[in-house]
Length: 143
Image (cartoon, rainbow, N blue to C red; front, side):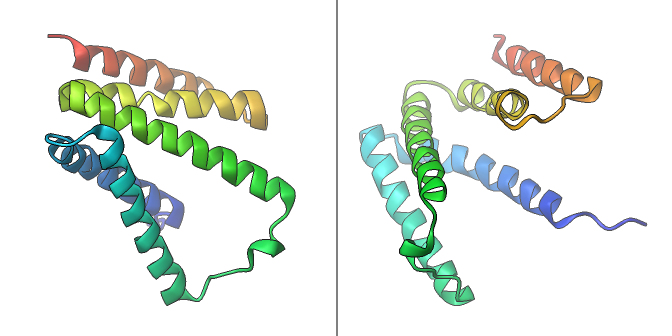
């Protein structure tokens, strides 16, 4: 039997923890402004990541990073922050059962961005997957 690739295990872990993020986030924004909740979440992530870097000895000098690396990490950070702010506000205003399916349309956007900006190819399987994700999100939003 073929071993499951490490990236697939981490991707499943990401999906699992994203599911918990939705649940805990919905409960966490119940009584405070969503922007403040996002700030607290960010502090926790900063502390957790710093601890992992320390335990694994992976700290590097910031000056060793190229301008291109800095540029894309800054843009990624801005996109992440805006995503989290939107996500927590959506959780505060709407039901988890409505917010989560729409949030998962990020998979569709990521696939499209991969094609447009990275030159990745989309097979008929990929197109079918996009169709299923979009239709699944719409079905989950039906009353």
